[in-house]
Image 1 (cartoon, helix red, strand yellow):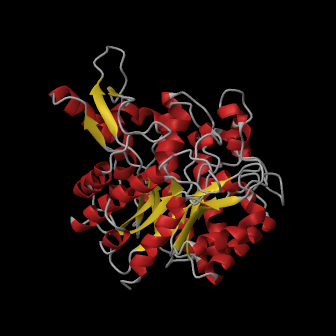
Image 2: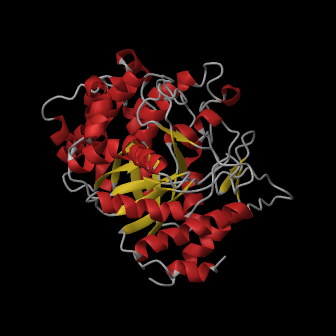
Amino acid sequence: MASERTLAHRFPADFQFGVATAAYQIEGAVAEDGRKPSIWDAFSRMPGRVYRQHSGDVACDHYHLWENDLDLIKSLGVDAYRFSIAWPRILPEGRGPVNEKGLDFYDRLIDGMVARGLKVFPTLYHWDLPLALSGDGCWTARSTAEAFADYAEIVVRRLGDRMDALATMNEPWCICHLSHLYGIHAPGEKSTDAFAAAVHTLNLAHGLGTQAARSAKPDLPMGIVLNAHIGYPVAETVEDAEATERAFLFNNDIYFAPVFEGRYHPEILEAFGDKMAIQDGDLKTINQPLDWWGLNYYTPMRIKADASPTAEYPRAGIVPPAASEDLTDIGWEIHEDGLSDLLAELYRRYTLPPCYITENGACYNDEPVDGIIDDQRRINYLDKHFHATANARDAGIPVKGYFLWSLMDNFEWAEGYKMRFGIVHVDYETLVRTLKNSAYWYLDLIKEHQKTR
């Protein structure tokens, strides 16, 4: 592993280092100051959906501890903080009357960031859809896209003057694939029809939300955060290569093509178009010019063709990694070259604006020993992926910054509190935060980088 100094000097002086979180994963206070339930509040209470029925009811109690948490972020030396705004705090019913107390919370949070010299990188939607909108069909309903646009305008009119960059959505793949097709995330549907409808509604919401945000603040840098997947064929066969291409269209192009090029691939339309309810003008609305975009990357996919007669598009299976491979504690393969390979492939296929790595990190469940959390495996993971990011930059990819996932251990969706991604340990009984060795490593990396400025 190269020294922090060597690694830090691979990035230009204006490269931004940050940390990232999301509202439902850290805030808690789910019934305070006018907030009403989200689909995740409901989903987490359904037996068998979330590990031991854990929920975000308390989480890290960031809603009450936000000042200490901002001090913690500042102590890490980072330039920027990426977080999300909870739609159910702003519009508890999803639309209609605005909850001023919800806006007041983010007013205080953003003012606290500005006072500490932290750049403000909010995301409007990180999965906590107001439960009231589930009666309309969640993301399968076109009305949800229209409600999202109203929400975006309300937030930007109140808070946009202090934002450095705004993302509409976090990880459409999770919102549509995991939530409406595979049933793993809220609302827990397993329906191809629902998936197809959700994809187009989500893409449309991004376009409408971008327009709405710009109507409130035309010069606000707008983007979207996508968890694109790099796929590698399991075998060097024509069948696996073709399956890998179909998997790319199914997992990536289904969002990238409409957002950045105003079109759906013919194969996507053939497979799902009759279920997407595309209207005249929708693709033009989706294809808003963006100032930046974010990539979330953790692990690759290994793809094998599925030749069974009943296989549905993309007729490609994902082969899980072997237990003997280098895995994180959540079971994800470590393959840092996937990050640079993916960036190269995306910029080869599409005309894209500058990029931030908006999430990257590793799950390791190390606990304190004599007050020290020695998460050397996480340090190794981060070091490899920072070098992969630098390699992408060296190859001409315009990566402007990196947000480490995550600031602190938190509610990890269907995994509950079983899995820990933070560089800061959270004791969920006492809510005490303790810096892991990876946090000190990140601080040293940033200190070395600051010497180049």
